[in-house]
Image (cartoon, rainbow, N blue to C red):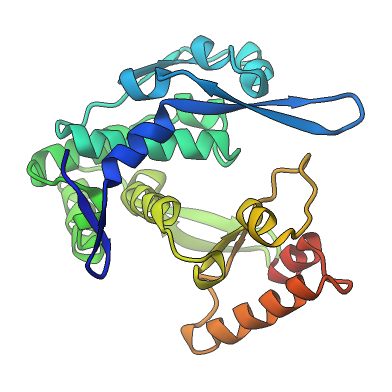
Length: 259
């Protein structure tokens, strides 16, 4: 299988790593005292199937209640990118978003138009693409928006900022999805030290540096990407120092500072 260059001249078995992850999943059990236990389950369901079913996923403990309460008609989601490597990457993003509690069963299975349109665009415009990370994302997104407009598909929507009670123009869900998938794949496969990233995962910081967090609350990330680049590294350095000192500066406090 093709090896993908990740950074500099370093090459690793990139897609083999994705396959390995997709061959297992972590099942969570929340106990009566609020503690959480996690068991790794060897099951290649998410790897070998290009069609995922709500009820199948609902057999996993942390998704059971969501699946039982799911009343919508879309019971399956299909991954239909022609290139098997790109298809693997998109499945990997969905898998990671689900198991990291960033997407729910409802959001995955009900709103399938964004995936459908991105799939059609890549199959048509980038049939020989061997990895989403090979895209010039700025150029590809411009092409994607033009492609959507040509098909009469809405690329902008009006949203409301409830804090300032003001409307603003934003990309539609379909228009934003190409970059969402690309960015998520990049972040999940970025093997740099956590402190060097623009998006920190407390689970990695806990494992490496012993920084505590509330495991029963799914607030795993701090995202610095919206901070101007002129001061971003200084802000990250400040947060790193405060978190490592463990002096009245918890993960929850750090997240509150970023709101």
